[in-house]
Amino acid sequence: MKSIRRQNLEAELEKVRADVTRLEEEIAKVLEAEQHEEVEHLEEYFDAVETRFRGLRAFWQSLFEKPGA
View (tube, rainbow, N blue to C red):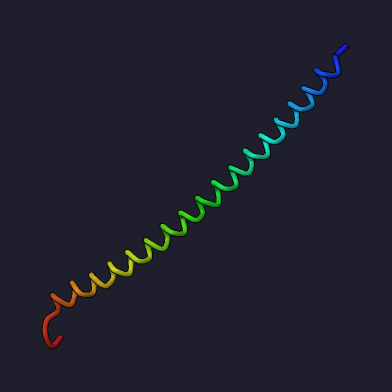
């Protein structure tokens, strides 16, 4: 037969395990949100690079256009 102390400790252990599981799930959600935010920043950066590249390409092409064409 289990002692009262042992039962209390096992119950407390189950609570701690449940808390750890909850915290792990919370960490996973935070990591996912951070990853989405980083992807957004990357998309913004790529858009800026693409815009600059288009401007550079247009400038480069204008250098080689024949006058009066």
